Image (tube, rainbow, N blue to C red; front, top):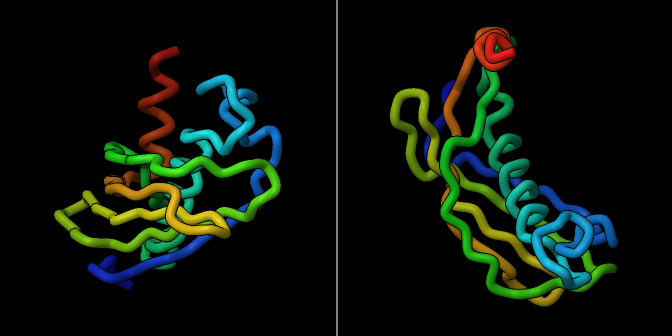
Length: 128
């Protein structure tokens, strides 16, 4: 299967205390942390193209341009969606959006690159 523009996925979770800015160190309030929202968006992007990757392939994030536009308290469900908007060789661009039960809480773009899992890990661990 080939990665194509329009592939999409959605993932969701419940906001727990450990997902808050205060707990992850990105602020001092008990609201959904931007790093957690970004991770959810990246997860949706991964899921959008997972079935098109070979057994030895994965993707790694290389760029993010995200706006976190609304705070979400502990106890609400959040979801993120990602849609492929461009494919340039091994680089895939996604439009990403996140929502809580009230409405949109963030949006932006995300880029991932296809890599060989083993070669990627070997290169990373060669730094040791």
